[in-house]
Image 1: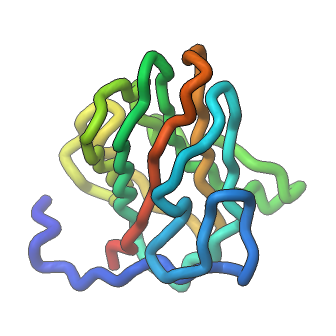
Image 2 (image 1 turned 180 degrees about the horizontal axis):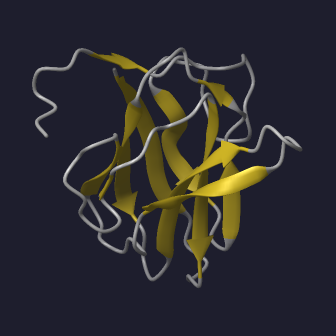
Length: 148
């Protein structure tokens, strides 16, 4: 399925203050800044206005020997807990000066850990995890656009 015919928009910021290193600017989940290794960063809940999917833009400047994994979680309406959206997780990213796209959209041709055929759901969030690195901070950011 081609996404070229769809109109897209930036994901709006859900709240004025997010976890350390985040921003309330539309389209920005985690600002592009240095963060500690061996840590997990979780966005606040993001409320979907009715989009079918989302595209995450994961930009890494410096990563050293650390790996970065980014995943999308959806909220379980039964207990308000969080569940990983099946296959909506990157591989362990290790390359400096790269941007990786993670796309969730129903009907898209699946490509493991890059393009996932699924609906986004009404409430979602992003978890970015840094693992097994040296003591050098990792510079990365995550942006998002809804796919309508």
